[in-house]
Length: 361
Image (cartoon, rainbow, N blue to C red; front, top):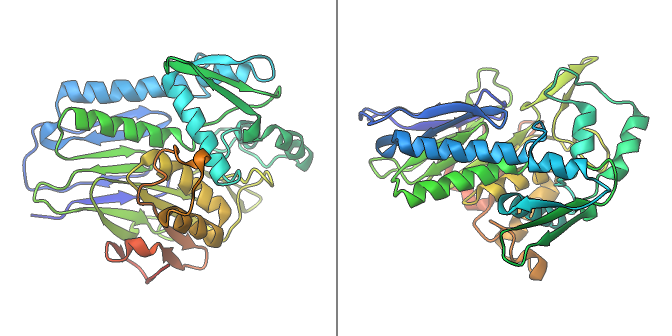
């Protein structure tokens, strides 16, 4: 039997899942364009039309609630009321906004859900991407502050309200909502008793269960220097998510300079930390999503320190106890501009470099 191989390149929209099996499958995996990316779910022998309908209905519901590009979304309503009044939101939106704020606090703003005005200004991954004028950046930076988001939970737990204190503020949950979606799909798989599945949400991979022969999945992380998308690293995993943030996911080139989409909200420019990519491995995809962006912005030294702190249980206090995924096993892999590969000690034995060597810390 040939090996199953899942490749997780950082290049947005070109992520492919390579699944080879000599065993026949009852149904085909389903692929749709949702949340601005190609999403694929393969539930193998448990995959039925009814299951896939439920999974993708959930994805479309999440997109309709969270997309800043849909005028009727709850996030658009919050942004439209910035500086004016609070907006009542569903339990889903309240949960993700509150979780995003907790990760913002944990990372001291390296992850900030109020990055919306800066994202819009740069226009990366749109037909109007450009380098803003310095005065334009300085004008929007005061609008980016997660501390200016006010949330209140309904007494019955059915939802809550969200308000942006200042006019012009805007939420953009693109750095966390795919992780939430992957976790939601995983919950559906568990409810239906699915034995094994691959969830691929355009860069967010969740390997559910194990292969049919009981072995682990092979998940590859793209080699930043390989235009063909071959892996630099291979992870051997089960029941885990792999989320990568990198400089070549979404970018544009102006005057010979590449500008990527991972923005540093302190400077207003794409983060320059000597990294090409950061990959977080965890059981919680919402945690991996938020942390992969955070550690990229923090850089290798501070990012590794944060992950190690979480691993060692040193992140304590009432304000951090309820952060989803925080106390699961969290590991990180960095690929630096100089080609160095650094990974968490916890990945030793399950991470195999396809090129070069990795240093475990």
